[in-house]
Length: 472
Image 1 (cartoon, helix red, strand yellow):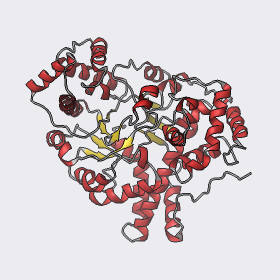
Image 2: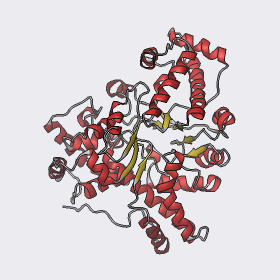
Image 3: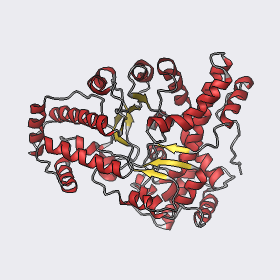
Image 4: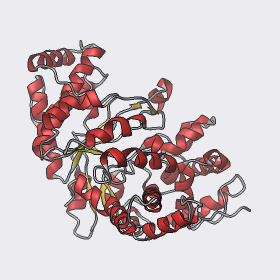
């Protein structure tokens, strides 16, 4: 049967001079700790050190990169255990899902998913045969045997993966008890921080918003019948998150517009929203005002503000209604930044307390807008590509687009943005290899000395994420 192996020079160029420089750069950072300032791993996994039951629930069900491509080839999402946490597969169903994945292995040729999964199978589970219909059961059994070992649990893997810092994504009304459980455990030596994710509370024209705001009032103890009350309740929850270790807030809307309404108009539209009478256009205007308020709060409380627009969420209505969000149906779209971010940056762009990280799926604006903006405003940094463009060639384009207008020091360091826990090391390894190649190109072109490239690759891995996300 065809062997499954990892080439030591994967992602490195064929040209020998550049490859040799890239190798030397990569060797200096390949074993450094992982800093993951934005992701979606459930904190309960870490707090309870929950053992995984089967390969499917660990490797397939939570990974919407895998699910979307299988769905594109006619596989029902429910058969893969989607949505995870709400669908429980029997042992036979979980094995059948794994067979489906292995049978479709050719679907992933040339994709970053192939890179991540190969690394997981070989380096973590010791698999040495290529996935296929013929090898599916043997691989499933090998992974299952590994999962049953007492040292193969989330906390032990955090040690093995050398994850120094990990941020989760959390609802503003979450009591954060899993984070509190971790913080109180003196035997746990890693840092797992919550992230304030208020998107649903900033969308007043969407179904369910009124009930969410009612919950916000209950949890914060602040009346949210007025817009001023909503603002105070949000300030209250941000303070709670910060007291429980949060370093950032995370925001993902259709656009980047941060134009605030006059106070009276914002209050009027808020009253309409509470009465269920707001239009979509009015809801958008109020949401942009609320996002501006989030920036104002960030300029005062110091939580780093991350924005990642340009995703058309839940593109397929039936899939969303059946399975909910985050199952692979988000699609990239174009976005404008220069005019949209001006109100926010005009107000807070030179405020030393304000810190903004923007990352997007719209590649066109990295060199044209985001790089020049970050190259002027002290408060702004550009996050690495995510979702469809956290792939080798896309990261190369990202570096080429950003380096000239903004340099290396105005980027965030790698952000894995994943709920697929075991893919984290492979994703960071990919980033380290690609950044080594980009720097090697500069060295070989005599645009950078190798000792400078060594400093840059170290800073991108070990310094930039800590400085940008204030992890000191």
